[in-house]
Length: 450
Ligand code: 4AD
Ligand code: MG
Image (cartoon, rainbow, N blue to C red; front, side):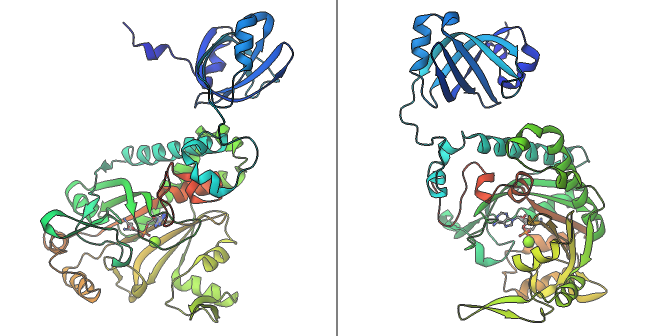
């Protein structure tokens, strides 16, 4: 016998169900009407459908029940699917019966405007709003595109641990917890070190999971818990790494354009800039980027004794912030990779450029339309002595990184990888105002509920 759930029908299937009488299960998004006619906008997670309730078709009792429906009441609605140019989406339901499952009282999110604080406090309900549903559907497509891209290109998915004994991305942003008798453990900032070990076992791997940063950044681009995909490849140098990063981003954007037109329309996203996201992207070195900043009089902005102070010309060796990144990106309609950053501002594991040890073989990809940094990656230091020197210089424990050093002791090879922040990409593609709208339940320094 076929499973019952296979007979369920959904709003996204209406096009192929014209003429049939079906039952939809969902929630009342909105209800209007007068006299002998009621319009129930029903949502079921796959879309919103107009259900037309005509008193003469359903009878007095069903019609009177229908009038008691409120926003977000749950219902089963039976009726015939008809094509209708007037209906949103092009199809509507000629209702023959309504079964009320649960009436909702005083649903707090009404069609009127609510403040940001109110909405985020009610995130568990806010997710039912059409914009939020559209963003979550794009999120699902982005996650699938990422997995499909790697699975289809010879990569193996490996899962790196969340509880870790040491830091990957600096010791200042670690979430700490007691770990039995073994001292402190930290929530993973990045699966990279484990990805490196598995790349030297399996060749091409990716890890995809949550990453945690106890970062005191109250920006529109920072979460304390975000999802990062991290490919790691044996025998890839920095150029191979950049090529792969471009291929991945092109694939994600084009996949979303192909599969999420309805969602992007709901979000009123102008898709023309996204259509341009095809390889090759742009590339420049950090040094070239600094030259551009200097030539265009873009200063470094430094907090000196609590005062934002502009320093000109932009000094070589300083990291870029939002101001510099957005200024540089204004010239570009596609992502830009900036490579070869100063050694002193980048992580210990990055390989120094053999042609200039002042810089490392690092690369960041910046998105257009103020997307900011969406990818950070590098070729890894594969020389045992140089890596040990960097570990010591950063005051990291040699003992704790012993296993990581082993990777340079036994069959060390050129290898590279990068991390792509899924929410940064979803924010860019959807045009969401704040990164908190791109993850179901955002974690930020000032919020851990709901
Ligand atoms: O540049 P990051 O810190 O690089 C790493 O973690 C490397 N270990 C990755 C690797 O080479 N395997 O982070 C990578 C990306 C950033 O470019 C950004 O997109 C995202 O992760 N990211 C964040 N997203 C949201 N909130 C935050 N607080 C983020 N921090 C980084
Ligand atoms: Mg980075």
